Length: 170
Image (cartoon, rainbow, N blue to C red; front, top):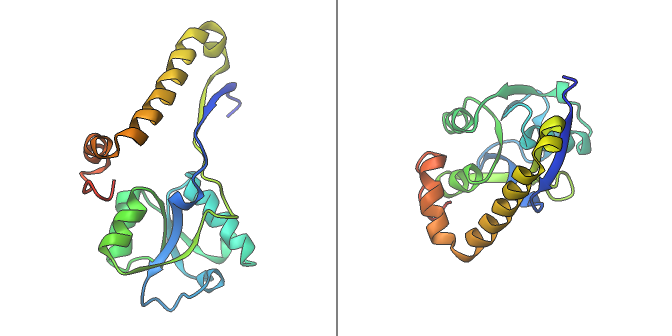
């Protein structure tokens, strides 16, 4: 899109925070078994990249599957109702599904996708407002420290933002 962007922050990698899951009783036992199968994935998300990397590792092309581009909530519904053969998702939706449904993990991001979150801004904005980016960076850092020190309180704050997931899942 020819956008001029400036990278100004990154969170630590968390490769286990995303995975490709199937129902526990699914005939899909390994990644190569996804050939011809319908897979729920959120388009252009980190999970989309994980799926592409996993398929490549299994000797498959993306065109070998039937992608169902769905939001996490719609992906969960499609997975729960057996409308898709596999679902590629991330936390906290991954843990929620694993706790509430009989699932099996085909692959997670280990050795495939680091699952990093990057923070970008318009290059002109970065030049004109470096003090704002400095405050954002400092707030991200202090929020990370607070989250680690206060996991229960953090879960209570985040739960409503993620569709009222139960506190233990968050």
